[in-house]
Image (cartoon, rainbow, N blue to C red; front, side, top):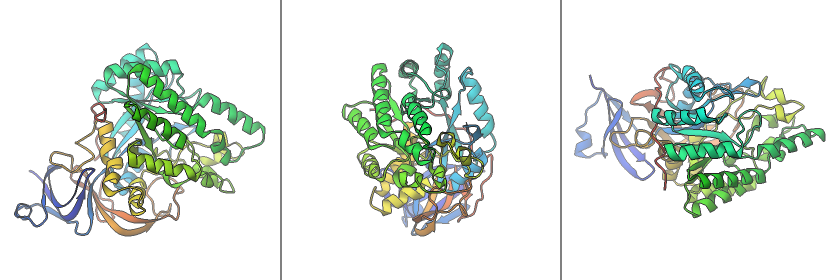
Amino acid sequence: MSSRTVIRGGLVITASDEIHADVLIEDGRIAALATSGSATAEAWSAERTIDATGKYVIPGGVDAHTHMELPFGGTAASDTFETGTRAAAWGGTTTIIDFAVQSVGQSLRDGLDTWNAKADGNCAIDYAFHMIVSDVNQDTLKEMDLLVEEGVTSFKQFMAYPGVFYSDDGQILRAMQRSAENGGLIMMHAENGIAIDVLVEQALARGETDPRYHGEVRKALLEAEATHRAIKLAQVAGAPLYVVHVSAQEAVAELTRARDEGLNVFGETCPQYLFLSTDNLAEPDFEGAKYVCSTPLRPKDHQAALWRGLRTNDLQVVSTDHCPFCFEGQKELGRGDFSKIPNGLPGVENRMDLLHQAVVDGHISRRRWIEIACATPARMFGLYPKKGTIAPGADADVVIYDPTAEQIVSAETHHMNVDYSAYEGKRITGRVETVLSRGELVITEREFTGRAGHGVYTPRSTCQYLI
């Protein structure tokens, strides 16, 4: 038995087009598009018809950077794969790429198996994995080849967090050389963690313990230096590079220079760097702890460079780095010592709406919104055109979006499993109304109608965004 759905009367927006069209969905995939009111569209019959008049019809968002259930700093991210993917669906995201973790002394396979077990049967939307590589050795390098063949085609390394995830330049170079051979993409957390640890120690010795000092010791210059170094190591290895959560204008400048040289170097930023700043980190009564993440929030004057990078495509993707910790009992672990505050912010539910607000505010166009939130992350990580667009043959991951509805972001109404919102009280124009994942209704006119276990693991091809 085939199942058919028709979405009628909406403005279909993809990274390349805006067209008034009806969309025919059959057996979980986009079957056809036809001009609204045309004979072709009028002839379609279906078990379900969705009226999208006055609404946008957009691809489901692809959030290429989340951390569900991540152990960190003596605690763990507060969203499970079940709660986190449900919240993602509420926010119009229909695919996440999370990070499986290799611990030092462990194989990549052990880490991947652990994360598969966490996610399997619990996700409301589709999911995939990157692999965090914490222990580069000959066995790890061989495993990287096997994982690429299986559809885990990206590997994250850290120039930060000595003693936890940190890799030195030699380990990074070896992994980059391997990815140059096997087609994998190295993702880099670019901060000089060795130097930062010195500054942390010195700040605490001076009695500078409040959350705002987290931002002061993780200096923009140390993000820029690490970004530059990662680019040069990738150049030596002949490998592409994707720099995660870019927050500083000096780091954007390094990426821009590399791209002007024609290198396969890519950058991601996150909503927190576009909408929040060190003013939030400085909030009194330890409230600033809510905004501790790494890379850290920067002074507001960095935001213009990030928006410009998104417009000029020197930054290609906006992901969330969703890694929530509750204020009570988790962020509070760092009272009296900012270095003990778990690093991470909640945001998987807010990304699509915040970026639509950026359209309203004139920072980006509607098509660029879809490009940086849906199409490019899908292309960057080997999911396109299955994900990230509305075209015949694509998965029917579709969002009906009301561009005129108004909402106020609040922890009282969000669906993430965390006791605060990083954007509390922010007024936004635009709201998700209905969400389909592979043709199944997950959000139906602002009601959750999905289920844990609908989301399936999705293997990926290699990067489709190389120059």
